[in-house]
Image (cartoon, rainbow, N blue to C red; front, side, top):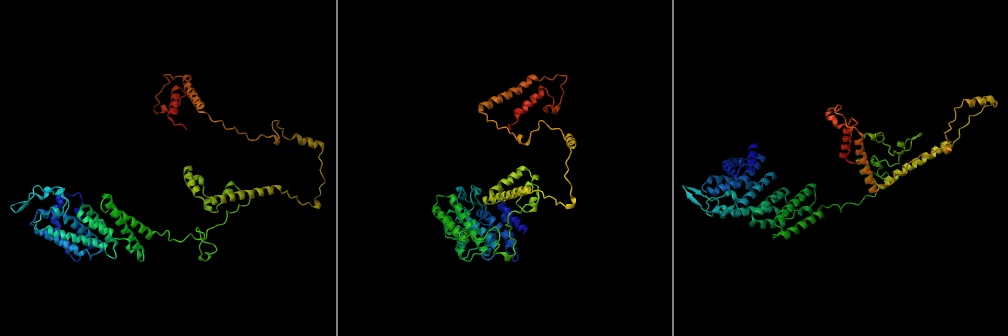
Length: 500
């Protein structure tokens, strides 16, 4: 298996030069033939061998054009080709995909192509039994039937071209089957793009076959998830193949038909797979949970739709007043641990998504709490203190202090503050009004005055003497001394910092 994979990767790699590939392809033919004829061979080995054969078929064909009497090499290539054709219809799906790729290469080689250098087919001569083609430039021409002489003994064009056309018809037969295999259809469509681009004589037949193919014809049968996926895959591959054809030649003879086909395919796909119009309407019961009246028997945990929890007895803090959730995890979470920028990024999108009805309900709940708390506090302030019950045995006569006792009590009082005002004359909070906005002229004048004042400090500060000067190193930017150099550092920083 490793050897077959190595051969397939080697001849598919563009790093190996074509001349070396052509030389090595003659060497490995016998090995590929023996691997294919082995009855108990693994499918993975067969796949790699067929891929390698698809890569070397054009190389062997070019070699046979120049070596007309090497019949043994061509017989080995013919045996490989016949073996692949026999497996085309009976092998597993993965092997059949490789067979389709091999057939595409055979059709491309055995049909006439464009000759870039006409001198390829000129100056055929024999010398000592060897065919000489001095002006042949195979690297400039695509390998095709156009390079083969009419009298070639091993690969006569009169026999190879009908074989290629028959293989093409067999390749296109996948579009006419009543039940389409999505894997084979996609593999065939992917291979036909190269033939449409390189073989103009076969392009019309290929495009006509694709336009007559309906990838959605199985949509009328009972739709299973597997069948639905296969139909969508065939429709997308067909549409992509035709769009590539239309992109290369927008004014071609099939351009109009291709556009109509793509539009019709899109409309059919929309009608077949669009389930938006077939869905039921919105249910009358709530969608954010189960209905309490209808779904009690299911034993599901119904969402809590009650109002906010009541306030605890006793003094109430601001946090308790504005807390509307009964979840202990939320109420015990310390939000101050999060950075402010993260809180802003979380809070703003959440506020945008909250419905207005939920916001109004939360505001009304807090307002109701506040009014209830206010009434409770007012009622507690108005309730008089209950007098203690008097007993008949605890009778005490009224005590009237004498004048001397009143004078002694007054002397013990603290002296009155003459500046202390009675409660009725206490001053309230005072707040300065906002200054009026500055005009552009005033702003410019104040800015110039500030700059002049900053630079006027230079004349006041003294120049540091040479004796006091030191070499501060990196500390020269610190401005630790209050002298002219330090003030210059401050001015430089003010000039280079951005305004707030």
